[in-house]
Amino acid sequence: MLRCFDEQEDARLRGQELNLAIVDAADPDHVWGKASLYDVDLDEARAAVACWLAPHARGRGVATRTLRLLAQWAFDSLAIARLELTCAPDNVASQSVAERCGFVREGVLRSHIRFKGERRDTVVFSLLPGELR
Image 1: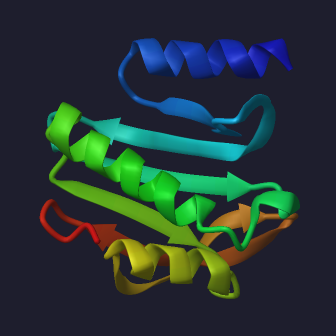
Image 2: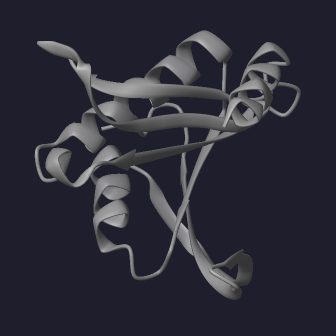
């Protein structure tokens, strides 16, 4: 487990990745999930964003608010010109969050990644500055 944290810290220090805990401001010891800015390429002004929530945090607008805040920060602080969000084709909740934030569905990458011992398709969304809702 510590190796994973070491790798994440190394990626953060290189400016390639940022992993954040999502917590309730009223109870910061209670973790609701995780948000990530990853595959950061400042030369290309491009990055990917992701958000995962524990079951108890879902359906409250937490993912939408988190992605909006992280996207705005990436645009303003890092001068990112394109954010990408990917998810499984059957992950309707993540697709809905992406669309509420203004992400545009670009298509499906067939047999894109390994997942649970098999190949899985991935839906790709993008968000450009000025499109954030």
